[in-house]
Length: 325
Image (cartoon, rainbow, N blue to C red; front, side, top):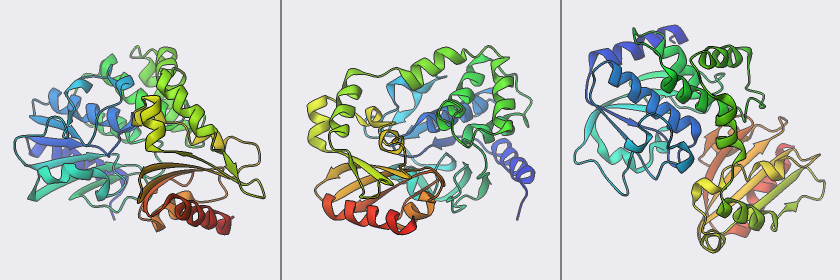
């Protein structure tokens, strides 16, 4: 079992010893996934290494200000022309989370796995996993300090973005003294914290507001008031002109109701599949619960995909949450 410091050294050696990397994050990337992707790209650029940034699905438009975010390829629109045998996975809680980008890994590919999810199954050839880190960006902050590179406001902004979004604006329980110390150092490089908070946490698109209104119309609570959930259907998405990034944060609304221990957001994918996002007040380990359904995440924030009819899935998931309570 390697220490965190030893794992960072192994990651450094992996990056220095090889070249021509494929950098991938999880499907439907969030702030930490995108910022971690461009951070690794920035580091490799400083080292004169070749790299390609790839994801399954589009990068949220609100992240387009990050360093070279427009160069992250969406494989559904612009697939790579070949496969890679040097892979760096960031913020992927398990191997399945790389999604369809796996088809661009060679059979003998070696993987550097950098992640902060406690459900990570150490699928990499080299693994840097720190489950008490607030974000993968926090781990990358430590990793970048191992290299002789000159920091600037662009890389500081990328790291700040990952920390800002994964801590809910420094409000969640993962906002540790280490996080605040890191943020202080990033601000010293000229990061505009208030503007980032406005853009990433406050600002909403009109379709986002419309689909939130649809979701809240489905708000349901358990008899004891400890579980609450909302639902969004494909028809809702179409009617509102919404895209996946417009759904971010919806799960917090049922969770934020006073007395609710677990909030759930059910996104209907099709007639036979539903994605469930779960948020906990702390008395239920939703990571373990999601993992039992083939998903994963954190103790207070997790998700999973389930096959079946919406009604049956709601009954199953809500029932499991009730039993945990």
